[in-house]
Image 1 (cartoon, rainbow, N blue to C red):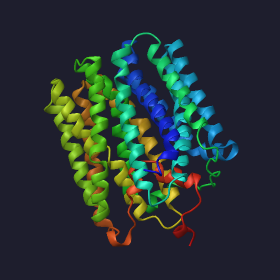
Image 2 (image 1 turned 45 degrees about the vertical axis):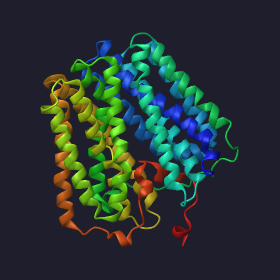
Image 3 (image 1 turned 90 degrees about the vertical axis):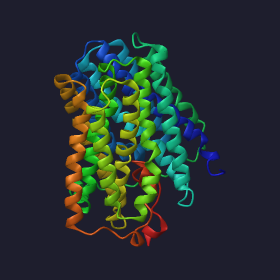
Image 4 (image 1 turned 120 degrees about the vertical axis):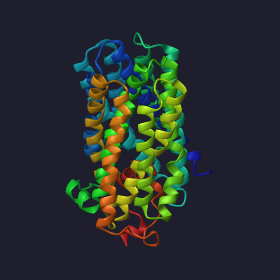
Length: 412
């Protein structure tokens, strides 16, 4: 664990940042509902965050090149904290949309800074282990943060203030970290058509994940609330889905490295369809059944981004991996922009049962597309591809390229 010790300040920063951001997503849905916002309005506010995140992904490299990692993080953390405080002062859906849009830009930049810095400080020999620790920090911080809501309550500015404090405190560890920051990132071409040509399956897959899982993160609390769950039960419901997403993440990644990756994607997608259908038609209003169901739903659906990203990188040529990772993240954000809005409209007009029926419909379309692609061209044999274990974190391969020079094998 010696390679982890120098990264402790960055991991602490990541834990505080991710926890505050994860808390904000759940709280805004519940607070908006308490303020009388309709589900479709809450979905629109969630879409604002995704639009901002997409823009942040495109322009963050320019910011990092211009002012460096620490200054970028400091500026964007301050913007995020100010946005949270502003939302506590003005309760208006249009203003909240604008603030979530700004927050999306800032958070994309913050994640880029932290993840690129971490990747620049590790080697290929310990990268997977380091990222597994980072993923554990992610899981723990988001799960714990959910329970701040029932402890602090929905009304008043308290939770917004806690979010702002967390985002501000995330500045402290990274400011005290090793002064030798990563090298400025290289300019990366951004060609969405090229990403589609490399792997249509990966593109459609990440869009499907954005349409479904962003809806879960933004509208899931409203679904649970309409079932009659308490605030504590809603926090448990959301945490169960997040924890479930980690349980199968690494086993599926390792398994897909050894087989035709598309077969793993097919079975994982089927699991997402079945568990979504169970939540729609089998779980009813039973609290325990819904928590167990969403745990299984997260276990199957959340790893799909990583699997699709790995599949896309299988077909990428040397030097194209950063392009694929950046492009897939952008395609995901397109789905994440539309998903919360569509799901919220369905929930508003057809009730909570329509929510997971919507996700099953999305995954069914992706399943059909995957089967067709399996007939269109052969897969890359496992013996001819390097392990894509690194891509199990959705953006780490991209941000690794941003912050560090090419690997030796890529230079050659």
